[in-house]
Length: 80
Image 1 (spheres, rainbow, N blue to C red):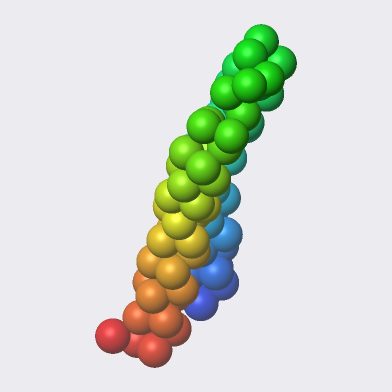
Image 2: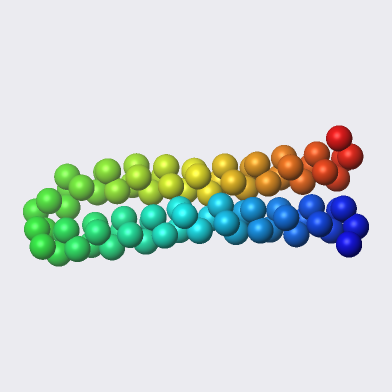
């Protein structure tokens, strides 16, 4: 296997592994939000902003993994 193919394969694995944690975290956060709103509907407006902030931060982790994978791919392909 040539280095370019290995770098592309490694990039896919890195992004996949980097998205697993935030994906699980988002699922748990939304499930907890839905459970809490079901139990106390009047608390929805207090909890929703924190949910969106948390989801945004979790999504940022997946985007960081993608950016780092692109940086590593670029350095491998360019031969540095």
